[in-house]
Image (cartoon, rainbow, N blue to C red):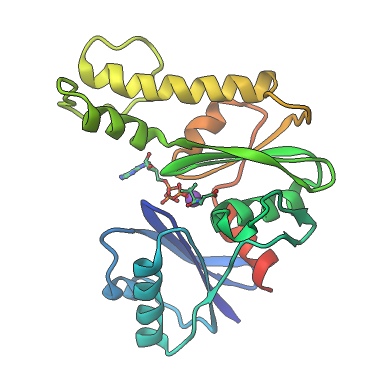
Amino acid sequence: MKRLELDAGNTFIKWRLLDAGVVLARGRWSTAGFSAEQLVECPYLPSRVWLSSVAGDGVNSALTAAVQQRWQLPVEQAYSAAAAAGVVNSYACPERMGVDRWLAMLAAWNRIGKACWVVDCGSAITVDLLDDQGRHGGGYILPGLRLMQQSLLGNTAEIRVEREVEQASVLPGCDTSSAVAHGANLQLLALAQLLRAGMPGRVKARTVVVTGGDGAQLAEMIPEAEWCPDLVMDGLSWALE
Ligand SMILES: Nc1ncnc2c1ncn2[C@@H]1O[C@H](COP(=O)(O)OP(=O)(O)O)[C@@H](O)[C@H]1O
Ligand SMILES: CC(C)(COP(=O)(O)O)[C@@H](O)C(=O)NCCC(=O)O
Ligand SMILES: [K+]
């Protein structure tokens, strides 16, 4: 039984097609530029389609219509809940928590089974604490690497980035482009060092689970971290099976 899993974030829609736990195909589409024709990139006929989305109603409707048109299948969407798969939410209104954070926690808890930090470095960087009984101990929402840089460009008169800076350097930059890019990297390094040395708060967790588009960069800064690129999609089966 083949299953298409979709993780719609604010920047990219990630997808993979699974058959009995084996990934047969995967890819990603720009969230803003998604069009129904892109589904032809998935060359298999799924029997179920699962969705995690924090991308908004317009994207959800476009995905649902595209799946219906190509395969005549409904989309089964996951939602944050008060409790599921051993994890207890801390939000008084659980439905307000981004479902990507929730699913990442379900997957992390069922993989690690002890207190941990779950970090998703996407458009936003989310840092969520699970205690050693699977209770959400709260979290943080920070701008992601790209948003940190865009907020500078959008809110200052004289910051103009002339070139893309690719390397993950944290050294002082000697032109505007590298000063901005390295500054964002430095904020990621500061987070990495806090996660290693100990975060504020009562509950202490040493294990760090990392996912997201910029997650590999954070994981490199935390040698003992678990790098789980598909953590949000991994969480779908804990919410929907
Ligand atoms: N080509 C790219 N275009 C946009 N962002 C990119 C690109 N390559 C890497 N990124 C980084 O990846 C992040 C998006 O990662 P992802 O986990 O897919 O986010 P989301 O789940 O929010 O869509 C961006 O915020 C950016 O920092
Ligand atoms: C924090 C987020 C924007 C992260 O989204 P992403 O970076 O994955 O696109 C998303 O989880 C969200 O919209 N959350 C709702 C607010 C909350 O979780 O409290
Ligand atoms: K995400």
